[in-house]
Length: 116
Image (cartoon, rainbow, N blue to C red):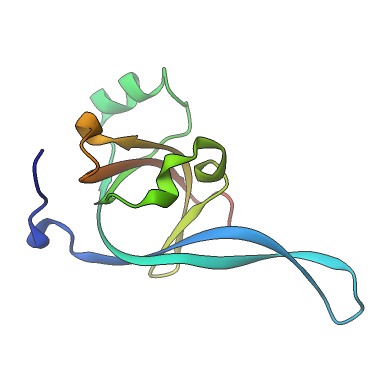
């Protein structure tokens, strides 16, 4: 894929990473910090795709396509991220750099988890 049409990325989403902060009593607490606010395409995985994705992760329910960002190059960091869209929470399990072209990234995610 050489480019992404802007019309395909029609959902404005927040990509977040957990960080540790101190609460009012000084105790450490986890908060979510925005890594980026980007345009995305969010698609539920069909039954056939779910059977294939089952080999990757049994909980993957959606694939979210975004433009490539350097934040998705570190698999360890990606596994901690989440996507927020209109009150919905998607935990990211993996980021696939489509064709290794650094143009688009497909995020394999599950809805309703990691909503801390």
